[in-house]
Length: 183
Image (cartoon, rainbow, N blue to C red; front, top):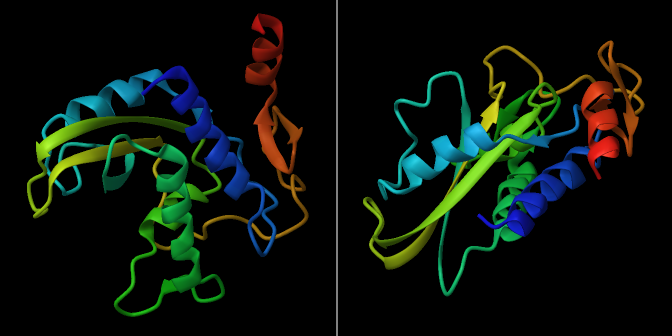
């Protein structure tokens, strides 16, 4: 991905994370992770429409689109649309629907994302050809069975120690100070 696309990936994730309903008290601000991006790129180049069985302790979202280029904002928006099928009270998805991409996007404890895409002449398990295949990996991973997506409460009211409120998200104080210093 280009530097601009990387920025858009993080921005889109944080946009949706800051607007959860009900509001999140402990939602961490997402940051870019280049190691995760390298891992995502290596898997995207395999051109297999299935989750990476060797992803270890990384969350993963996949997106595929035909056309001239990858649209990372559209990918994150499509994942977020799955919220329509998710019942926050029960923590369950409507039968026959997918919600795991959405729940990964808004998993409060996930703090890092790294993505990359590859133009696949043939994406295995997909009939179309010349498909742009996007892989995003997350640390720590979301979708932990038995855990809630996030704590409900006023934004930033339950930020972990060492974090402060940045636009309704819990930003890591050290990372924020470093980013201010280098920019």
